[in-house]
Image (tube, rainbow, N blue to C red; front, top):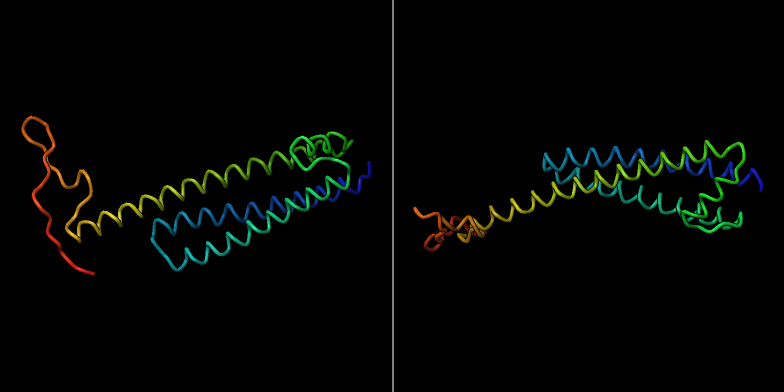
Length: 162
């Protein structure tokens, strides 16, 4: 097998690692901006994230083409077989692949955290709007009796109209 393919894969994985590191930084910035509720900066981050994700998808297509050109399938098994047949560069390629997988997992985890923060903010905004409309949500419209049972509060009052 040609070492040219191994060199190309090594260069491609390094570009992927660099891009994933940038994505991780953006996700961390996004979390800060979500907590600050900076909508303008969040829009910019979203655009940058989109561009990085597109770049990573392109790298994935490049990797699939490279593996196909070398006679391997474009899935995980094909990549592992390709790396195993790399001779003296097996260890560096294997290490790079593992670092890339771990970095992508960290991005996925951070993205989930960001989504949870965003969902919490959305729910809070909905509750505030419901209160302003005089139609508080669920448990917010009830009190407890002496026996510990919930009791709905009588009618709501609209505080403001948008």
